[in-house]
Image (cartoon, rainbow, N blue to C red):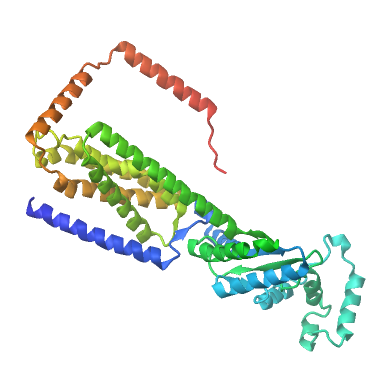
Length: 434
């Protein structure tokens, strides 16, 4: 190995170690993974102020959670609800609506002239509203002050408080024996660490009170996001395992050499390492669907190891350096064109497509470097007898390939099948941009 290539090898190994440390730091730090559905929407479809307003409104709405605890008796429901409220408070992932009562009251006061207790405008009775304010004004226990009368003479805020705020939710069972617990999450509902800390508490509480007949009805984006993340992890495992097993089977059938397996898996691992460090370095959070894409990306990075193995290291027909020279230029061109193709995903203006583009480009570069710097070091000399056997097999395969030839009939049949398939696809498929 030349001095320049040895320097590149050490530089690549050091870069891999630093990349692994950086990835571990991002993952252990929390908040690096995202399941927000808004990441699937075009970033430039709306004007920046409107999009920012939608993002803030979505974050506020998605953090809200409502849970209705029911039991055979009101006493059991109240006790179970109090236990759930205590567990959630101790976890630090949830803030009860009662704690945010002051903010709710300020919101009601600011919107008192736009809100009403009645479901329709026709149901609003001005005389009744005036009489209600007079009753509260002369009540000795009503929280009425001079400043309130000056700013809200008809006491609309107190009226809204009595009809809009839930009668349950503060540890008190309703007539049907249910207790409503509402509040907000302290973190984003689309962050995996927030989902885990919150849903684990709810699941543990459910198991603890299941024998008492206690049930819970849940509403909130956190529950849907957690379910989606769980299915995404399952898809990653399924696709990744299937791709890996397919590669292993293909390598054993084609190359008939066990050493081809670790070489290929090494290149795949190097590609995944480059993908992770690139996407974590560029983006603050990475969507789970990016990793689903990455699990299918395994076959692309495995090609670079297969290119080297296809040069025939088992037949000893050329030295390792000579075989590297033969494939360096075409494989490099292949890597560049593939990176350009995947990089075009970033032009669509969709955040998750941009993440996939960075993920793919980083993986291609790392896998390409591993194939030319590390894989040749694992290319041990094959015994002469075994090399002759592999050379004979290679010659027979080349002879079989040479007997295959194109003529006018085969070319015409291929064109006919291709055109028929394209016509069927055009007439039976449509795009969805919803």
